[in-house]
Every structure is written in structure tokens, then in C-alpha cells.
Length: 344
Image (cartoon, rainbow, N blue to C red; front, side, top):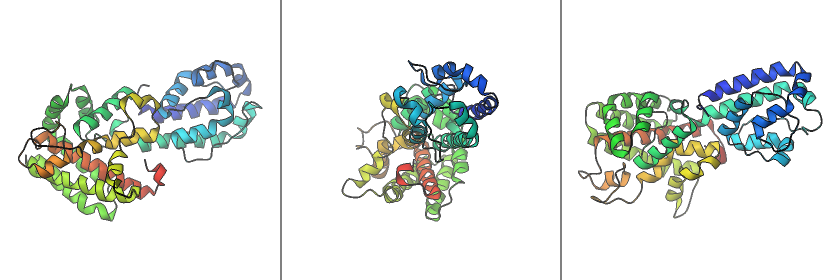
């Protein structure tokens, strides 16, 4: 897959191809086997209309649509909806009867499904990460997890690329510090999307933290950002996700770390969004002791070991990034009023 920014172009191209080919059903029938090889890599031929195989392979990789050959033609609509969470009505037909007629008669509904799929991609992949390949998105997940931060929505794509090239946490620290002012600007721009009234004070605190970063006041910036992310995760997210009981906080933190790197190939779109936004949330609440804590940003170390090695200019930036990403995620979830199982 060349990059998820190509998802929109992929869908546009697919729509154009389907529209053109619907005008010539004979062309469909002559090239059925060619399409299925690209879409499902089937071991047996099934009657499917011709579309660029590489194009549809891209779409399959993006949505992680699990193709089950024996039942594929009878349940395509359901699989698309479950894999990509496309909230449109997709026609459910017996594709073994007359595929050409079905597509011709229902062209507008299929194109609507395509548009819904494009919107699903846009919704789950933050805009600054949409140019990245699947391999690079895995690296984003690793950075979030290892550094106790988030690269969702900020920083800008060029800085994300530098961070993904850095070898380890220490090398990334240098990138964070070198680009501190630009990252602060990117966080401010992203925070402009916050609209929920209950989030305004937290947004203001983060704007003060980014102002402090620009002036080199990294200790106050880190303390403020750590306080914000603590409230967002342990109050606002907990309330929204409706966890309860003695483990409710742990459940909330674990909500954003549903997959491991070796499980990436089996991840759904919602799983991908959660780790791209909040894989670092579990990290920042890990047990921490002065002199023995991890090299990542840590909320507990920030709160209980002021003056210790829990503080650094790079950690101040990491803290501002993850606090902003957590706040933006909950703000958008509430604004969109999605059901809990679709909150991602």
C-alpha cells in the first residue's frame, strides 16, 4: 500500500471505473476472472466485474476486509460494513445470479457505499498521518507507545517523518527539542477544532503549555500538560466510555492499546485509530520511581517527582502532544455522538 492519503484517490478512481464499465456489460463479462484475482486472490473463479486489480488490492489492505471465498459473493455488503464501519446501506444481493444487471440497477447505491468508505478512512486516520504507508503507521504506533506521546493531528507531517527516521527515544528527543516551536504551533492549530464547552478550560491550559514551550519554560509546560491529560483520561474519557468498578481507570487507559505490533495485520480500522491516537496513554500511567522509571514521558513521575529525571524539554513536548490528542479525540467523539462501539 503506497499510503493512506491515496485512499480518497483510490475510491475516486474506483467510482470512475465502475461508472464507465457499467455502460458496457459485455466488457464486464469478458474480464470477470481478471478482477477476482486482484480483489480476493481466489483459488476458484467467481463472476466479478473488471476493475484494476492493484487498485482493489489497496482498498482491501486498507480496510482489512477478510475475504472468505466460499461466502464472499453472498455477504460482501456485511463484510464491508463490519470491516470499515461504513454507515451506509449497501445492497445485499446474490451475486451469482446476474452481476451485471445488479450493478447497473444499483449503481448509485454502490457509489454511495464508495463515498462512505472514503469518509471512514478520513475519519480514522488523522490528517497529518494520511500520507504514510502501513509500515510507517506501525512506526507511529511504536513511537506513541515507547515515548508516552501521540503523533495524531500534530506535529506536521515533515516532523513526523523525522521522528520515524530516528533510531530510539533519545534520538527522537533531539527531534522534539529542535522542532519545539513548530510543534507548539501545530498543537495550537489542532486545538482550534475543540468545541465542547466542558473542554474549554483544558484547552486553555494546553495553550498556556505550548506558549511556555516556545519560551523555554518546559517544566511548567510539562506539569500543565500532564494535569490536562490526567483529567481527560480519568474523568472525561472514563465518563464517556462508561466504565465502572474498581478497574474502571485501567479499562479506560487500556481502551487505547487494543493491539500489539505483531497483531497489526489483523487490526480493524477502529483498532488502528485507537493506537494512532492513544497508544501512549497506557504508557504514561505505568508505575514510575525516581531513578528507575522508563525513558518515556510519564504522568506519575511528572506528578510525584518534580525536579527528578521525569522532567525534560522533550518530555514537555511529548506531554503536550498526548494531552492535546486525548482532548481532541474525546471532543470529536462527543460532537459526532457516535455509539460506544463506534466511538473509535
